[in-house]
Each structure stands twice: as structure tokens, then as C-alpha cells.
Amino acid sequence: MSQTTQRRCHFHNHCLQRRIGAPGDTAMRTYLSRHLLWLVLLSIALSTVLSGCAVTDVHRTEPLERQVTWALLPLANHSETPLAGQKAEASLSTLLHQQGIRSLTQAPRAAPMGLLELPSDQDYQAALSWAQQQGVRYGVTGSVDEWQYKAGLDGEPAIGISLRVVDVNSGEIMWSASGARTGWGFSTTSGVAQKLMSDLVDTLPLQ
Image (tube, rainbow, N blue to C red; front, side):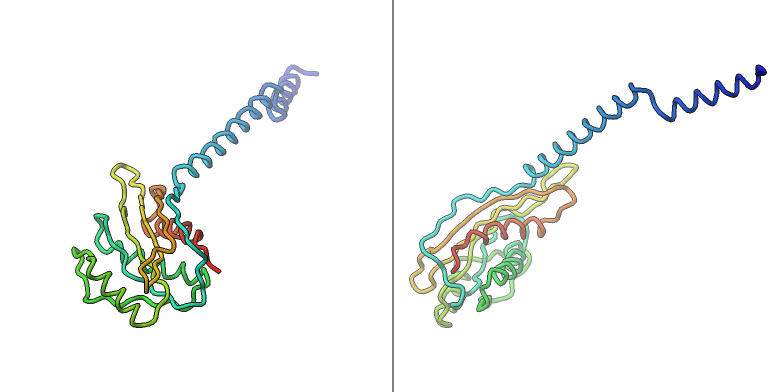
């Protein structure tokens, strides 16, 4: 065998060994795969914690009937975001319908609100009086306590909402729940608020 042929065979065998991979390379790939899997699981766990929802202070008195007449009363806006209460009301109406509450009417507002105006207790009392006149059994109300994007590079949305169901005739609170949720930087305040309210509404003792 000529010297040139020997060199070609040596080069071919060297390339074949690189393709097959040495045992050390296989062990390294296995280590990296396991390490990557651990990082993915850790990322999922952190996302669950950081975007998690804390539902607290759930209060129930007795089962609530789906088939009776319900009214959606104004939500007080305690946040610094204009019209956050009305945005929450729009999502809340959809969530209540999904719970099987078909006879749900939103109470009319006394007057159109400007961007910087906040619903007052008079607005709530006016809506409650309207519900009583309409023969409504339950009224859904509450407050938006936080509705903002946090300061920082990511600007995560942060939402805090309290909800309650009142007996329109007696004023007794039949159910109440409050919670807070944060999302990732690519999330929206409306999307996070809807997820939070969905968790809250799921605790309604409906029958």
C-alpha cells in the first residue's frame, strides 16, 4: 500500500470515529440533556409561582341559585388605572354566563363617566335601587384594587380584585372572594384579570 493510500485511510478512519463519537462525547451529551431538562422543569415551576393566583378570604353562606334573576352592579375602581372597573365588568359578565347564570342584566349607570371619574357609593346605591325595582335576587359587585404594569424592564401586569354577591333585598353578603395575580411581561392586564376572576368565580356555591 502506498504512502498516499495509507494517509487517505487514516483520514477516513479519523472522520468515521468523529461521526460515531467517543464514549466521552456520549456521556457529555447525556449530561447536557439532563441539565437542559432540569432547567426546563425549573422554568415551568417558576412560571407557575410567578404567574400564580392567590385566592383568599372566600366567604359563603348558602348555595346560590343559577335560575333566579341576577344583576351586575358597578365595580369600584380603587386602582390608578382609569375605567379599570368597567373593563373588569365586561369580563366578569362573560364568566358569569359561563357558570350557567343566564338571567344576568347589567345595571344601568346614572351618567356616562369620564376617564378620570371614579364610581361613587351613590352610583352603587342607585344600581342597587334599580335592581330592587326589577325584582332581582342577587347582585354581583366588588372592587378593582390593582390594575397596572409593574415598573421595570419586563413590566409584568399585576391585578388585584375583590368580588361579592349580595342579596338585593336584604343587603346580606352571600359570597365574597378576593385574589391577586401577576403575569409575564408579554401578558396583558385584561388577560391576567380574566384568569384571576375565573378562579374567583369558580368558588361560587352555585346550584
